Image (cartoon, rainbow, N blue to C red; front, side, top):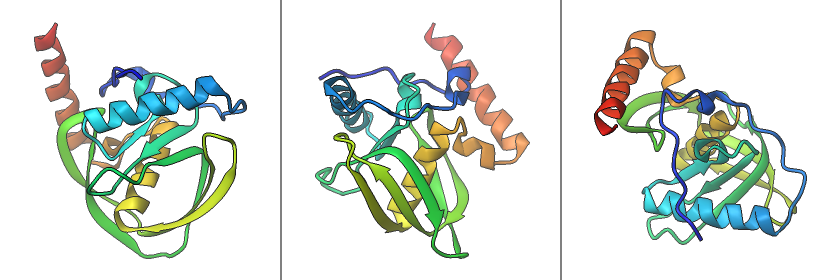
Amino acid sequence: MALLPILEFPDPRLRTVAEPVTEFNDELRQLVKDMFETMYDAPGIGLAATQINAHQRIITIDVSEDKDQPLVVINPQVEPLTDETEKMQEGCLSVPGFYEDVVRPNRIRLTAQNEKGEEYTLEADDLLAVCIQHEIDHLDGKLFVDYLSPLKRNRIRSKLEKLHRQRV
């Protein structure tokens, strides 16, 4: 297993739209394992392959307290199950140190595949629903900062660019 570098906003590679997974092989299963290791180490509750510069429709999630309920989400499709929305504070491993309120549907149905290519359906609400939608956004080249006002988004961009310059 390996820890993978996580791209940080405003890296343009985060805007890449991920391609569907068509081969479910040992290489894919190793990538999923590496993504879980990277996500847990970060620490985070979700990681999209786009965030590690692998532009395939792969997500790893674990919203459990004990980090013992890993969920592999490949080629996801989501549909809202209600018109009700929920405002929840979101953070992101690609936007470190920033947390902002985002409004999303609070109940969804996810259809996806696991690392073996087996299709499954899952109904989710609350934190899991938000996490799934947040990570699918990554696969579509979208970040949670895109839900913010241009002023807030530009402030976050400026602060992270300054931090990146200081690291170099």
